[in-house]
Amino acid sequence: MAKAQPPLQLVLDEITECARASEAFGKVADYIPELAGVNPGQFAIAIARPGHPTLVAGDSDVPFSIQSVSKVFMLALALGKLGDQLWSRVGREPSGQSFDSMLLLELEKGYPRNPFINAGAIVTTDAVLQGSSPRETLGSLLRFIRAAAGDETIHINDRVAQSEIATGHRNFALAHYLRSHDNLKNPPELTLGTYFHQCAVEMTCTQLANAGLFLVGGSRTPRLVSEARIRRINALMMTCGHYDGSGDYAFRVGLPGKSGVGGGILSIVPGVASIAVWSPGLNHYGNSKLGTEAMEQLTTRTGWSVFGPHMTKGG
Ligand code: DON
Image (cartoon, rainbow, N blue to C red; front, side, top):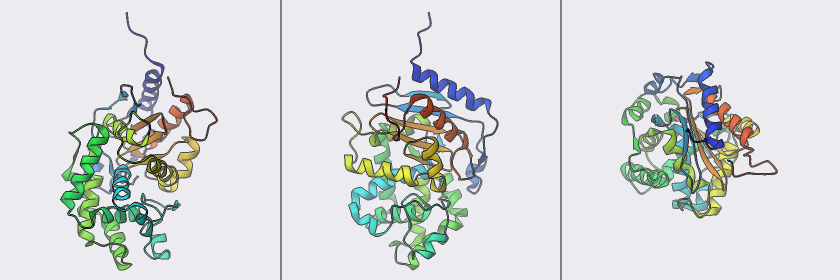
C-alpha cells in the first residue's frame, strides 16, 4: 500500500505540476551566451528545514548557474571580514533600478545603493578580494557554500565565467566607474574575474535550499554567521534581493529572497525553512517568472510570510 505523502510534499508536487503545465516561461537570459541555450521548460523546487529531510520536486538534481544568488554568500564573507566598515563602501537601500543600472551610481558618486545590484556586488567582492588573490577568495566562497550546503561537490563552471568575461561590458563600465571614485581597490579585471567566477557557481535546487539553511537560524542549522547578521542579510534580501522587483516580491511572496539570472531564487522563512526554486525563464525584472509564481503559490498555501499574524511551521 502506498504511504500517505506529507502535506508539504503534496504542495510541492502540485506546484510543480502547475509550473510544468504553463508555457509562459518568460525569457532565458541571453546576454551571457553560455546561458542562452538553457531549456526554459525546466522547473524545480526544494525546501530544507532544520532537522527534516529536504523535500524536493521537479528537476531538483539538475545543476544551474546561481548567478546573483551568489551575492548572498559573498555578502556573508564580506561582513565576516569587514563588519560594519562595509557600509562605508556600499549602502543598504533599495535602488528601484534594474540590477545592472548605472543611473544612480553617477548621481551618488560611486557609492552603490546596496550589495545586491551589480555595482554593489562588485564592491562587495572587491572588499573580500583585498589583500588576497582571486583563487583564495573563490576558495573561501566555495568553502563557505559547501559548508552551508553540507556538500563538497559544489563547483564553479569556468565556461560560464569565461562567457561573461567576454561579454560583460556593462559590468566593466560599472567597475571602471567605481574605480574612478576610488571605490574599487583592485584592478577592475581582477575584481570582475572574481565576480564572474562567483556568479558561475553551479548548484542544484536541492543544494541551494540546503545552502540557505544558515540564514534560517536556530540551533540545528549551520552556524556560519551570527544571529544579528542573519537578520541583516534577510532584511537586505527582502528590500533589495529582487532589484526593482523587490516590492513586488515582498507583496506577492512575503519572504526575504534573492534571485539570479540563471532562474534561481533562494527564499528564507526565518526560523522555519530555506526554499530554493528554479526555472530559467525570466520576467521583465530579470527574476525567474515561474519561480516567483511558484513561491507565491507556496507561501499562499502554507501561510509562510514575515508579514502575517501567524507563522506556522508547515506540514
Ligand atoms: O553580473 C551579471 O550581470 C550576472 N553575472 C548576474 C546578474 C544577475 O544574476 C541578476 N539577477 N537577477
